[in-house]
Length: 180
Image 1 (tube, rainbow, N blue to C red):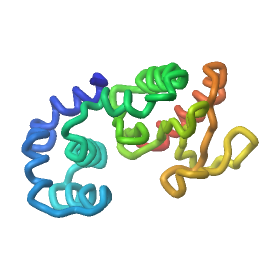
Image 2: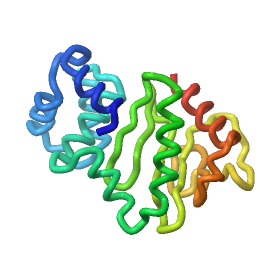
Image 3: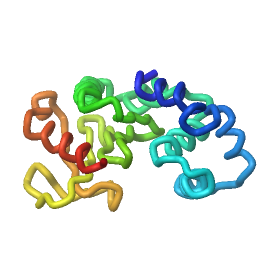
Image 4: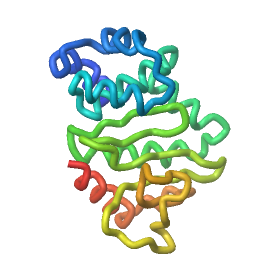
């Protein structure tokens, strides 16, 4: 399991008043049809931060799968892309102790106090990195958000480790900084 996710789970009782299992039980008492409904319930009714609320909702949906299993499943048949994911996640971990890496069914969410990026293996040969970068114009490389819609402001298509360069890492770090 990602060390930051495990730390978040370990700190959950102290920071939120309940363990992950207790929060899962709270969510089971309600019938949410959308991720956003459960998220808003935890944030509004229980005053949880976005990071804790999102982690609880994601992990309650996929109780049978660990975060590592979720990530592994994303790259089945796309194994050649996994080194790109690893390089991106390692770079993001270096930004600070407040980075939250949350694997979901089809993507990995990168959060601070708010989501700042999404890593999604979109095809067998390409990862789409969605970024929340306010104030940046689109370019040939830093495209509009595409399939991410309003979740992100920009997208960068990645198919080779060499594309994870200083320019890309600076955009990723800027998105992280904007998520304070």
